[in-house]
Image (cartoon, rainbow, N blue to C red; front, top):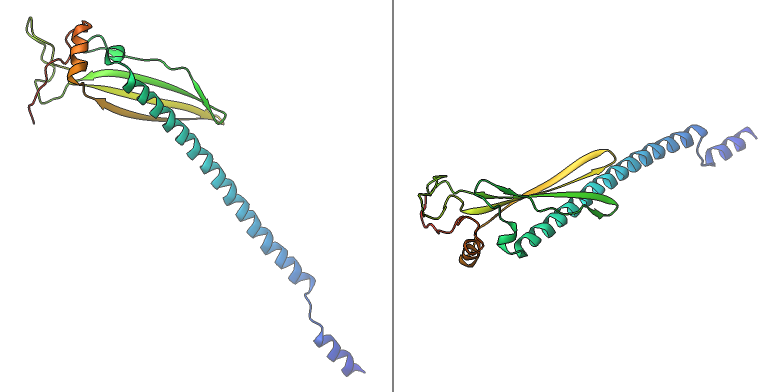
Length: 178
């Protein structure tokens, strides 16, 4: 009879309570790690989406500047700065604020910053520099994205500036190379 009982116990397959607890612990640790990495990926995705929204907003502002007549966006003087204003924009529940600065830039190869003689056109400013920056705040963390765009003037735009009386800024084209 003892032999029959021993045979029966050896044939029964099963897990002990300790084996079950160990398996539950291993599965629990794996699930916690998976949840942590999922939350981290979700947060990174949100930051990336905010950056994409900011980049799209900057592109919209730059496109707007490019479609405006040059006489509306240029600074009135060579040393001046024009700051077109834009209202804050909301995207995906986040408020974005955009600042724009437009200024003349002198190319260093053609007489860097030399004031014109009486009666001559002011050629110190060769192209426009447009700094566009967007800032936003999420959960108390402020972030920003900015870009710089350089724009040369077409002959028609140079003529429009002269006609508008904007000081003859950049009316002479230069073909010098450094």
